[in-house]
Amino acid sequence: MRSILFVCLGNICRSPAAEGLFRRMVIDRGLEDQVRVDSAGTSGFHAGEAPDTRMRGAAAARGIRLVGHARQVRPQDFGDYDLIVAMDRINHQDLLRIAGEYGRSVRLLSEFLPEGWPADVPDPYYGGEEGFERVLEMIEAACEPMLDHLLGSAGGSRPTGHGAS
Image 1: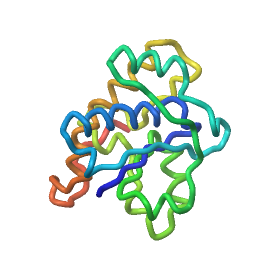
Image 2: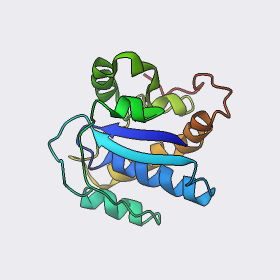
Image 3: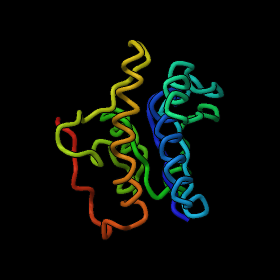
Image 4: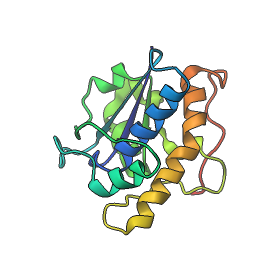
């Protein structure tokens, strides 16, 4: 079984949205017995909380139900997951600092996006409703390339896409 962990700061907006979108794609393709999906945050600020209600609403409008509760990244996650996807460069750097020998499994979501996308998935927490939609669009655009990479369809090579810096 292959595994992927999505990570943002608090694990209540971006990473649970990525978990939900990616899980739906895995289920739609009948791969739930081959791929494990989870999310976490680099901070424990929101540990135990459900995903943000605004993100749940935006995801529900796309037929995606966000479930689970926020948790902080644990040291064992680096050995337990084949791919750890950070939503932005700050969280990416935080993950690399604690990943040790597992740093090669840590990637930015924008590495799986075609040219022209931002390097960071913006945190919609303090913005308006349109921010939640933009986050879902970015994540959705990266899902198929991430799945291909995770399952080895890309020949084990590094992702070729990358958002603009």
